[in-house]
Length: 318
Length: 121
Ligand SMILES: [Fe+2]
Ligand SMILES: [Fe+2]
Image (cartoon, rainbow over all chains, first blue to last red; front, side, top):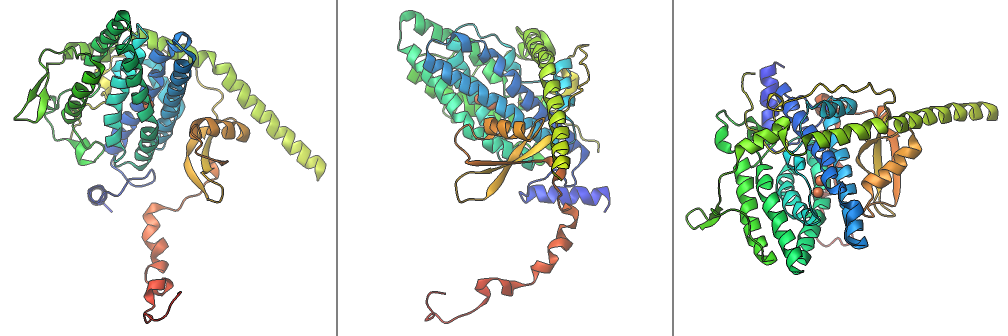
Protein backbone atom coordinates (compact mmCIF):
# COMPACT_ATOMS: atom_id res chain seq x y z
CA UNK A 1 0.00 0.00 0.00
CA UNK A 2 1.22 3.48 -0.78
CA UNK A 3 1.51 6.03 2.00
CA UNK A 4 -1.45 7.82 0.49
CA UNK A 5 -3.61 4.68 0.76
CA UNK A 6 -2.41 4.07 4.29
CA UNK A 7 -3.36 7.60 5.24
CA UNK A 8 -6.80 7.17 3.74
CA UNK A 9 -7.37 3.92 5.59
CA UNK A 10 -6.15 5.58 8.76
CA UNK A 11 -8.48 8.57 8.39
CA UNK A 12 -11.40 6.25 7.60
CA UNK A 13 -10.81 4.40 10.86
CA UNK A 14 -10.76 7.69 12.73
CA UNK A 15 -13.97 8.82 11.02
CA UNK A 16 -15.63 5.53 11.96
CA UNK A 17 -14.55 5.96 15.59
CA UNK A 18 -12.22 2.95 15.48
CA UNK A 19 -9.44 3.44 18.04
CA UNK A 20 -5.84 3.50 16.85
CA UNK A 21 -3.64 1.00 18.68
CA UNK A 22 0.17 1.05 19.13
CA UNK A 23 0.94 -1.48 16.41
CA UNK A 24 -1.41 0.04 13.81
CA UNK A 25 -0.02 2.13 11.01
CA UNK A 26 -0.25 5.85 11.78
CA UNK A 27 1.06 9.02 10.15
CA UNK A 28 4.31 10.19 11.69
CA UNK A 29 2.77 13.52 12.65
CA UNK A 30 -0.06 11.74 14.47
CA UNK A 31 2.46 9.73 16.44
CA UNK A 32 4.50 12.82 17.27
CA UNK A 33 1.53 14.94 18.27
CA UNK A 34 0.23 12.23 20.57
CA UNK A 35 3.65 11.58 22.02
CA UNK A 36 4.14 15.26 22.77
CA UNK A 37 0.68 15.71 24.21
CA UNK A 38 0.65 12.54 26.32
CA UNK A 39 4.14 13.04 27.69
CA UNK A 40 3.40 16.68 28.55
CA UNK A 41 0.25 15.52 30.24
CA UNK A 42 2.26 12.93 32.21
CA UNK A 43 4.80 15.56 33.26
CA UNK A 44 1.93 17.81 34.39
CA UNK A 45 0.60 15.12 36.70
CA UNK A 46 4.05 14.58 38.21
CA UNK A 47 5.04 18.24 38.60
CA UNK A 48 1.48 18.91 39.77
CA UNK A 49 2.24 17.00 42.94
CA UNK A 50 4.73 19.66 44.05
CA UNK A 51 2.49 22.66 44.81
CA UNK A 52 0.18 20.45 46.87
CA UNK A 53 2.97 18.42 48.44
CA UNK A 54 4.02 21.75 49.92
CA UNK A 55 1.02 21.61 52.30
CA UNK A 56 0.88 17.95 53.31
CA UNK A 57 2.90 18.50 56.47
CA UNK A 58 0.91 21.63 57.33
CA UNK A 59 -2.64 20.50 56.68
CA UNK A 60 -4.97 21.87 59.39
CA UNK A 61 -6.28 18.47 60.52
CA UNK A 62 -5.52 14.78 60.22
CA UNK A 63 -8.56 14.36 57.99
CA UNK A 64 -7.40 17.06 55.56
CA UNK A 65 -3.91 15.63 55.60
CA UNK A 66 -5.14 12.14 54.72
CA UNK A 67 -7.28 13.58 51.90
CA UNK A 68 -4.41 15.62 50.50
CA UNK A 69 -2.06 12.64 50.68
CA UNK A 70 -4.58 10.49 48.81
CA UNK A 71 -5.01 13.13 46.14
CA UNK A 72 -1.29 13.61 45.61
CA UNK A 73 -0.84 9.85 45.44
CA UNK A 74 -3.53 9.72 42.76
CA UNK A 75 -1.63 12.29 40.72
CA UNK A 76 1.49 10.11 40.86
CA UNK A 77 -0.62 7.26 39.50
CA UNK A 78 -1.98 9.49 36.74
CA UNK A 79 1.54 10.37 35.70
CA UNK A 80 2.37 6.69 35.57
CA UNK A 81 -0.64 5.68 33.45
CA UNK A 82 0.28 8.42 31.03
CA UNK A 83 3.99 7.61 30.80
CA UNK A 84 2.97 4.04 29.96
CA UNK A 85 0.62 5.29 27.25
CA UNK A 86 3.32 7.57 25.83
CA UNK A 87 5.88 4.77 25.83
CA UNK A 88 3.73 2.78 23.40
CA UNK A 89 4.56 5.48 20.83
CA UNK A 90 8.24 4.62 20.91
CA UNK A 91 9.98 6.88 23.39
CA UNK A 92 11.54 5.44 26.55
CA UNK A 93 10.50 6.60 29.99
CA UNK A 94 14.10 7.61 30.70
CA UNK A 95 14.14 9.85 27.64
CA UNK A 96 10.87 11.53 28.60
CA UNK A 97 12.09 12.20 32.11
CA UNK A 98 15.39 13.55 30.80
CA UNK A 99 13.46 15.88 28.51
CA UNK A 100 11.43 17.14 31.44
CA UNK A 101 14.54 17.74 33.52
CA UNK A 102 16.42 19.48 30.74
CA UNK A 103 13.50 21.83 30.17
CA UNK A 104 12.92 20.53 26.65
CA UNK A 105 9.56 18.99 27.50
CA UNK A 106 6.81 21.14 28.96
CA UNK A 107 4.18 20.64 31.61
CA UNK A 108 1.09 22.65 32.38
CA UNK A 109 2.08 26.18 33.39
CA UNK A 110 -0.43 26.25 36.20
CA UNK A 111 2.01 24.38 38.38
CA UNK A 112 4.51 27.22 38.18
CA UNK A 113 2.41 29.30 40.55
CA UNK A 114 3.11 29.20 44.29
CA UNK A 115 0.77 27.79 46.94
CA UNK A 116 0.83 30.52 49.57
CA UNK A 117 -1.95 29.57 51.98
CA UNK A 118 -3.98 26.53 52.98
CA UNK A 119 -6.91 27.88 50.97
CA UNK A 120 -4.83 27.29 47.84
CA UNK A 121 -5.39 23.55 48.34
CA UNK A 122 -9.11 24.13 48.04
CA UNK A 123 -8.77 26.49 45.10
CA UNK A 124 -6.52 24.05 43.24
CA UNK A 125 -8.93 21.17 43.75
CA UNK A 126 -11.90 23.20 42.64
CA UNK A 127 -10.39 25.25 39.79
CA UNK A 128 -7.26 23.47 38.61
CA UNK A 129 -8.58 19.92 38.86
CA UNK A 130 -11.91 21.24 37.61
CA UNK A 131 -10.31 22.65 34.47
CA UNK A 132 -8.26 19.50 33.99
CA UNK A 133 -11.37 17.35 34.27
CA UNK A 134 -13.16 19.16 31.44
CA UNK A 135 -10.17 18.49 29.24
CA UNK A 136 -9.80 14.92 30.42
CA UNK A 137 -13.45 13.97 30.04
CA UNK A 138 -13.16 14.99 26.42
CA UNK A 139 -9.94 12.99 26.08
CA UNK A 140 -11.70 9.79 27.22
CA UNK A 141 -12.89 9.68 23.61
CA UNK A 142 -9.56 10.55 22.00
CA UNK A 143 -8.63 8.41 19.00
CA UNK A 144 -5.45 6.83 20.38
CA UNK A 145 -6.48 3.75 22.37
CA UNK A 146 -3.86 3.74 25.16
CA UNK A 147 -4.43 7.47 25.81
CA UNK A 148 -8.20 7.07 25.90
CA UNK A 149 -8.00 4.14 28.33
CA UNK A 150 -5.62 6.03 30.63
CA UNK A 151 -8.07 8.93 30.60
CA UNK A 152 -11.03 6.77 31.58
CA UNK A 153 -9.08 5.51 34.58
CA UNK A 154 -7.97 9.02 35.49
CA UNK A 155 -11.43 10.55 35.20
CA UNK A 156 -12.82 8.00 37.63
CA UNK A 157 -10.34 9.26 40.21
CA UNK A 158 -10.50 12.98 39.45
CA UNK A 159 -13.96 13.81 40.62
CA UNK A 160 -12.98 13.35 44.24
CA UNK A 161 -10.16 15.85 43.67
CA UNK A 162 -12.52 18.56 42.59
CA UNK A 163 -15.15 17.81 45.22
CA UNK A 164 -12.72 17.78 48.14
CA UNK A 165 -11.36 21.14 46.96
CA UNK A 166 -14.76 22.74 46.74
CA UNK A 167 -15.79 21.32 50.08
CA UNK A 168 -12.62 22.62 51.68
CA UNK A 169 -13.37 26.12 50.34
CA UNK A 170 -16.95 25.80 51.50
CA UNK A 171 -15.76 25.23 55.05
CA UNK A 172 -13.47 28.27 54.86
CA UNK A 173 -16.26 30.37 53.36
CA UNK A 174 -18.32 29.76 56.48
CA UNK A 175 -15.45 30.42 58.87
CA UNK A 176 -13.92 33.45 60.58
CA UNK A 177 -13.41 36.74 58.68
CA UNK A 178 -9.75 35.73 58.24
CA UNK A 179 -10.71 32.37 56.75
CA UNK A 180 -13.18 34.01 54.40
CA UNK A 181 -10.55 36.48 53.28
CA UNK A 182 -8.10 33.65 52.72
CA UNK A 183 -10.68 31.80 50.63
CA UNK A 184 -11.37 34.83 48.43
CA UNK A 185 -7.67 35.57 48.06
CA UNK A 186 -6.94 32.03 46.86
CA UNK A 187 -9.76 32.24 44.29
CA UNK A 188 -8.43 35.59 43.10
CA UNK A 189 -4.95 34.22 42.55
CA UNK A 190 -5.95 30.92 40.89
CA UNK A 191 -8.76 32.10 38.63
CA UNK A 192 -6.78 33.56 35.75
CA UNK A 193 -4.06 30.90 35.67
CA UNK A 194 -6.86 28.30 35.58
CA UNK A 195 -8.37 29.95 32.50
CA UNK A 196 -4.94 29.86 30.88
CA UNK A 197 -4.83 26.08 31.35
CA UNK A 198 -7.01 25.67 28.27
CA UNK A 199 -4.28 27.14 26.08
CA UNK A 200 -4.22 29.98 23.51
CA UNK A 201 -7.34 31.30 21.84
CA UNK A 202 -8.69 29.44 18.83
CA UNK A 203 -8.15 32.55 16.69
CA UNK A 204 -4.39 32.18 17.22
CA UNK A 205 -4.52 29.25 14.87
CA UNK A 206 -4.56 30.02 11.18
CA UNK A 207 -4.10 26.52 9.79
CA UNK A 208 -6.55 23.71 9.43
CA UNK A 209 -6.92 21.92 12.65
CA UNK A 210 -5.32 18.54 12.34
CA UNK A 211 -5.78 17.55 15.97
CA UNK A 212 -9.54 17.84 15.59
CA UNK A 213 -9.55 15.99 12.29
CA UNK A 214 -7.61 13.16 13.89
CA UNK A 215 -9.94 13.32 16.88
CA UNK A 216 -7.07 13.67 19.29
CA UNK A 217 -9.12 16.57 20.61
CA UNK A 218 -12.86 16.98 20.13
CA UNK A 219 -13.40 20.45 21.49
CA UNK A 220 -11.44 23.62 20.94
CA UNK A 221 -9.62 25.53 23.66
CA UNK A 222 -12.22 28.29 23.62
CA UNK A 223 -15.14 25.88 23.82
CA UNK A 224 -13.67 24.17 26.88
CA UNK A 225 -12.75 27.49 28.48
CA UNK A 226 -16.28 28.80 28.00
CA UNK A 227 -17.71 25.65 29.52
CA UNK A 228 -15.44 26.14 32.51
CA UNK A 229 -16.39 29.79 32.99
CA UNK A 230 -20.13 29.02 32.79
CA UNK A 231 -19.71 26.27 35.34
CA UNK A 232 -17.63 28.27 37.84
CA UNK A 233 -19.76 31.40 37.78
CA UNK A 234 -22.61 29.37 39.20
CA UNK A 235 -20.50 27.40 41.66
CA UNK A 236 -18.77 30.44 43.16
CA UNK A 237 -22.16 31.77 44.25
CA UNK A 238 -22.54 28.79 46.59
CA UNK A 239 -19.30 29.82 48.24
CA UNK A 240 -20.54 33.37 48.66
CA UNK A 241 -17.34 34.48 46.95
CA UNK A 242 -16.63 36.28 43.67
CA UNK A 243 -14.47 35.67 40.62
CA UNK A 244 -11.90 38.43 40.00
CA UNK A 245 -13.20 39.59 36.62
CA UNK A 246 -15.30 42.78 36.25
CA UNK A 247 -16.25 41.77 32.70
CA UNK A 248 -18.07 38.59 33.71
CA UNK A 249 -21.59 39.05 32.42
CA UNK A 250 -24.36 36.82 31.16
CA UNK A 251 -24.79 37.18 27.42
CA UNK A 252 -28.35 36.32 26.52
CA UNK A 253 -27.65 36.12 22.79
CA UNK A 254 -24.76 33.69 23.16
CA UNK A 255 -26.28 31.77 26.03
CA UNK A 256 -22.93 32.01 27.80
CA UNK A 257 -21.06 34.27 30.20
CA UNK A 258 -18.79 36.87 28.64
CA UNK A 259 -15.48 37.28 30.39
CA UNK A 260 -12.43 39.53 30.35
CA UNK A 261 -9.24 39.20 28.33
CA UNK A 262 -6.57 36.82 29.56
CA UNK A 263 -3.08 38.24 30.02
CA UNK A 264 -1.35 36.31 27.24
CA UNK A 265 1.98 37.93 27.95
CA UNK A 266 1.93 36.34 31.34
CA UNK A 267 0.90 33.01 29.80
CA UNK A 268 3.82 32.86 27.37
CA UNK A 269 6.22 34.15 29.95
CA UNK A 270 5.37 31.32 32.31
CA UNK A 271 5.53 28.78 29.47
CA UNK A 272 9.00 30.05 28.58
CA UNK A 273 10.24 29.43 32.09
CA UNK A 274 9.81 32.82 33.73
CA UNK A 275 6.90 32.03 36.01
CA UNK A 276 7.17 32.44 39.75
CA UNK A 277 8.13 28.81 40.43
CA UNK A 278 9.49 27.29 37.19
CA UNK A 279 13.00 26.98 38.54
CA UNK A 280 11.88 25.70 41.91
CA UNK A 281 9.70 23.00 40.32
CA UNK A 282 12.39 21.70 37.99
CA UNK A 283 15.00 21.79 40.73
CA UNK A 284 12.72 19.74 42.97
CA UNK A 285 12.14 17.16 40.20
CA UNK A 286 15.86 16.88 39.41
CA UNK A 287 16.77 16.57 43.06
CA UNK A 288 14.20 13.83 43.61
CA UNK A 289 15.47 11.99 40.54
CA UNK A 290 19.12 12.24 41.54
CA UNK A 291 18.49 11.31 45.15
CA UNK A 292 16.42 8.33 44.09
CA UNK A 293 19.11 7.00 41.81
CA UNK A 294 20.74 4.77 44.42
CA UNK A 295 17.34 3.24 45.21
CA UNK A 296 16.73 2.35 41.58
CA UNK A 297 20.22 0.90 41.29
CA UNK A 298 19.95 -1.05 44.53
CA UNK A 299 16.59 -2.54 43.51
CA UNK A 300 18.01 -3.60 40.15
CA UNK A 301 21.08 -5.14 41.82
CA UNK A 302 18.87 -6.96 44.32
CA UNK A 303 16.65 -8.33 41.55
CA UNK A 304 19.72 -9.55 39.69
CA UNK A 305 21.09 -11.29 42.79
CA UNK A 306 17.75 -12.96 43.48
CA UNK A 307 17.67 -14.25 39.94
CA UNK A 308 21.11 -15.82 40.28
CA UNK A 309 20.22 -17.29 43.65
CA UNK A 310 17.00 -18.80 42.27
CA UNK A 311 18.92 -20.32 39.38
CA UNK A 312 21.46 -21.88 41.78
CA UNK A 313 18.71 -23.25 44.02
CA UNK A 314 17.05 -24.79 40.98
CA UNK A 315 20.29 -26.46 39.96
CA UNK A 316 20.87 -27.81 43.47
CA UNK A 317 17.35 -29.20 43.58
CA UNK A 318 17.70 -30.93 40.21
CA UNK B 1 3.10 15.96 4.76
CA UNK B 2 3.09 19.72 4.72
CA UNK B 3 0.44 20.67 7.22
CA UNK B 4 1.40 22.30 10.45
CA UNK B 5 -0.17 21.92 13.82
CA UNK B 6 -0.37 25.41 15.20
CA UNK B 7 -3.00 25.13 17.82
CA UNK B 8 -1.62 24.45 21.26
CA UNK B 9 -3.99 22.66 23.51
CA UNK B 10 -3.76 22.16 27.22
CA UNK B 11 -0.67 20.12 27.84
CA UNK B 12 0.45 20.55 24.28
CA UNK B 13 2.93 23.38 24.08
CA UNK B 14 5.11 23.12 20.98
CA UNK B 15 8.80 22.58 21.58
CA UNK B 16 10.06 25.77 19.95
CA UNK B 17 7.84 27.85 22.26
CA UNK B 18 9.21 26.26 25.37
CA UNK B 19 12.55 27.87 26.18
CA UNK B 20 15.06 25.41 27.65
CA UNK B 21 18.17 24.92 29.72
CA UNK B 22 21.56 23.24 29.68
CA UNK B 23 20.76 20.73 32.37
CA UNK B 24 22.40 17.37 31.70
CA UNK B 25 21.19 14.20 33.35
CA UNK B 26 23.42 11.28 34.09
CA UNK B 27 22.63 8.20 32.04
CA UNK B 28 20.33 5.77 33.81
CA UNK B 29 22.31 2.64 34.64
CA UNK B 30 19.45 0.69 36.19
CA UNK B 31 16.60 0.61 33.71
CA UNK B 32 13.82 -1.49 35.20
CA UNK B 33 11.86 -3.72 32.85
CA UNK B 34 8.24 -3.05 31.89
CA UNK B 35 5.47 -5.30 33.28
CA UNK B 36 1.89 -5.82 32.17
CA UNK B 37 -0.64 -5.92 34.98
CA UNK B 38 -3.78 -8.07 35.11
CA UNK B 39 -6.33 -7.71 37.87
CA UNK B 40 -9.19 -9.88 39.06
CA UNK B 41 -11.71 -7.32 40.23
CA UNK B 42 -13.93 -9.80 42.07
CA UNK B 43 -13.75 -13.44 43.10
CA UNK B 44 -15.08 -15.54 40.24
CA UNK B 45 -14.18 -13.13 37.43
CA UNK B 46 -11.30 -13.34 34.95
CA UNK B 47 -8.11 -11.36 35.36
CA UNK B 48 -8.24 -8.39 33.04
CA UNK B 49 -5.44 -6.30 31.61
CA UNK B 50 -5.36 -2.90 33.32
CA UNK B 51 -2.06 -1.34 32.29
CA UNK B 52 1.66 -1.56 32.74
CA UNK B 53 4.41 -0.34 35.02
CA UNK B 54 8.15 -0.52 35.68
CA UNK B 55 9.64 -2.66 38.43
CA UNK B 56 12.96 -4.31 39.18
CA UNK B 57 11.42 -7.74 39.77
CA UNK B 58 8.10 -9.58 39.98
CA UNK B 59 7.57 -8.91 43.67
CA UNK B 60 8.08 -5.20 43.23
CA UNK B 61 5.82 -5.27 40.19
CA UNK B 62 3.02 -6.76 42.28
CA UNK B 63 3.54 -4.25 45.07
CA UNK B 64 3.61 -1.34 42.63
CA UNK B 65 0.53 -2.71 40.88
CA UNK B 66 -1.27 -2.74 44.22
CA UNK B 67 -0.33 0.91 44.81
CA UNK B 68 -1.12 2.07 41.31
CA UNK B 69 -4.10 0.01 40.22
CA UNK B 70 -5.96 -1.01 43.38
CA UNK B 71 -6.09 2.09 45.57
CA UNK B 72 -9.88 1.88 45.65
CA UNK B 73 -10.44 -1.85 46.15
CA UNK B 74 -10.41 -2.52 42.42
CA UNK B 75 -8.93 -5.97 42.83
CA UNK B 76 -8.69 -9.20 44.80
CA UNK B 77 -5.84 -10.74 42.81
CA UNK B 78 -2.96 -9.44 40.69
CA UNK B 79 -0.96 -11.05 37.88
CA UNK B 80 2.13 -9.45 36.43
CA UNK B 81 4.16 -10.57 33.45
CA UNK B 82 7.17 -8.93 31.87
CA UNK B 83 5.97 -7.17 28.75
CA UNK B 84 8.68 -8.77 26.62
CA UNK B 85 6.97 -12.15 27.06
CA UNK B 86 3.71 -10.97 25.52
CA UNK B 87 3.30 -12.01 21.90
CA UNK B 88 0.69 -10.22 19.87
CA UNK B 89 -1.05 -10.92 16.60
CA UNK B 90 -0.20 -8.60 13.77
CA UNK B 91 -2.98 -6.05 13.12
CA UNK B 92 -2.10 -6.00 9.41
CA UNK B 93 -2.97 -9.68 9.19
CA UNK B 94 -6.25 -9.35 11.06
CA UNK B 95 -8.31 -9.98 7.95
CA UNK B 96 -6.72 -13.31 7.03
CA UNK B 97 -6.29 -14.33 10.66
CA UNK B 98 -9.98 -14.11 11.45
CA UNK B 99 -11.18 -15.10 8.01
CA UNK B 100 -11.83 -18.80 8.90
CA UNK B 101 -14.45 -17.71 11.46
CA UNK B 102 -16.12 -15.21 9.24
CA UNK B 103 -18.52 -17.41 7.20
CA UNK B 104 -19.53 -19.95 9.82
CA UNK B 105 -22.80 -18.53 11.01
CA UNK B 106 -23.93 -22.03 12.02
CA UNK B 107 -21.67 -21.64 15.05
CA UNK B 108 -24.19 -19.28 16.55
CA UNK B 109 -27.40 -20.41 18.26
CA UNK B 110 -29.48 -17.90 16.34
CA UNK B 111 -28.72 -19.80 13.11
CA UNK B 112 -31.27 -22.47 14.03
CA UNK B 113 -34.95 -21.78 13.44
CA UNK B 114 -37.07 -23.67 15.91
CA UNK B 115 -40.82 -23.56 16.45
CA UNK B 116 -41.98 -21.27 19.29
CA UNK B 117 -43.42 -24.29 21.13
CA UNK B 118 -39.94 -25.54 21.97
CA UNK B 119 -39.27 -24.31 25.48
CA UNK B 120 -36.11 -24.10 27.55
CA UNK B 121 -33.70 -24.08 24.61
FE1 LIG C 1 -4.55 14.00 37.79
FE1 LIG D 1 -6.36 15.65 40.08
